[in-house]
Image (cartoon, rainbow, N blue to C red; front, side, top):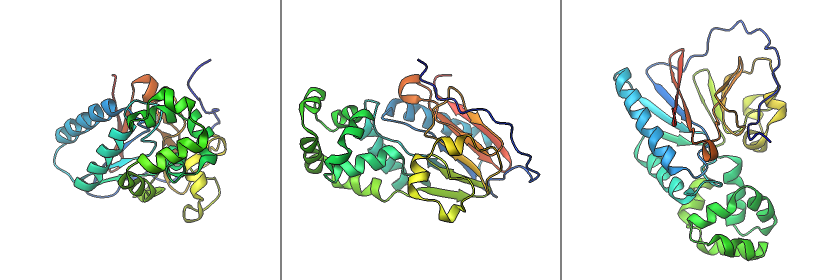
Length: 256
């Protein structure tokens, strides 16, 4: 079975608006789902630094689309690296559905632990010091209690405070997507972090060009109304960033 989740192709509705514009005097880079791959994040940050230097002086801003944790081997280290980026640079991180699960569990809610297990929680907690064999042996309530006692509160507070979306120029950055037909201001947090089919299959224009992660595709999923940049980094080795400046856009990848 393929690991790639390919959205059903629908013919795009016409959109007579001019190409989306990122705004004046800013160069944007948005990074897709990292999922514990600190090695790929560092590689991609290096590629972004070189790309930005090559393009010449301009204020730059970094946006991470969420899902920092689970599945890969270094979730704790990714969280710490992103915390440092947000503190030290013009960087913003959005909250993904995996952060939502992690937070519920870290607050001691054992009801989410079965889903957390399926989502790659063993790898996440291994990065925080809980051996995988112990994780597998522990009851759900024990896992939740362990997280409540052992996940640094600074990490919990940082992830809990992350926003769900960001509008810059003609672009809307979210983790998963938006519900078609609902105003941006009225979108629910659940949709912004979790939506899939209703958003992916929608071919008509949205109020903004939506840049999102969450739904894995082998390459960038560039449509007339959205751009998906989750290229399955945790297993493919390909972490993707989109660069935006004015009406121009380009992509950077690890593993090329």
